Length: 317
Image (cartoon, rainbow, N blue to C red):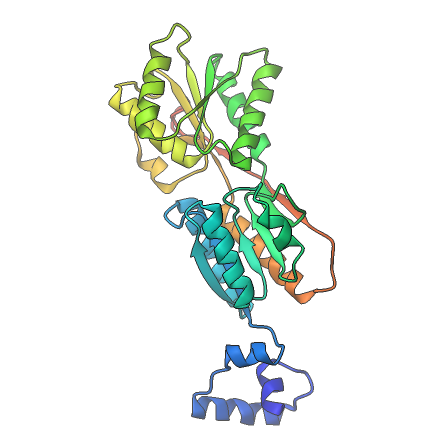
């Protein structure tokens, strides 16, 4: 009992006793057994994290911030990638919940997944990141998607552009839908006609953009609703010999490090990815420590327009 209290920082252990226990731990190379802790009803001191794609720089930054925050609190993070497949994600959640972990951080592949309702009503604390569940109330952390999109469109309008087309990939995702809504709201406020085109991959993007730029309603600006879409559109525009911003201006949503290396550098709405990870981890750890709490918390973080040159602005360096 004395060893257990010392390891867990219990206040009722004399300083001299704690010092002797710690010396013995170092001498013996003792490590607490997580499985044994669980069997005795103690916390596993671990949390689960499921993201759609670890290759995506946005989720890499989020995951890194979560691991740092959890480690500082003495928690281990079990990390899994769902590949954007709800069935894989559900199986990963079930595995983590039965392992068990003390709580789960989740970026849902589909905010409408029915299993989220069952998960939310279970005993394992859960916090959704970036994409709040639309089938159940859970704690969530997201960003100002609508505000960011309106800001991007407003900046393009300030340049005098009127034919601003919104290009999207993964249009079923809630953040993307919110960005499209923000784009449409700002366009209508200016009495401009919104136009949204959905791109599924680079091949279809080429045919869609070729038809768009050969039409009588050729755009003078583009708003791309996520980083996958922005990257794809830049590739296709180059293949079609359409120059940014000479032939068409471009503002994206999500900032990626290599955008500063492109010519021209890409103007984009930056999400606070690291803060998104830190905030969600802190929220989950708080929920784990206060098991009696039944209220839900929705945290919305601000975004920022990073002005470079793809929008038609001069370099600010």
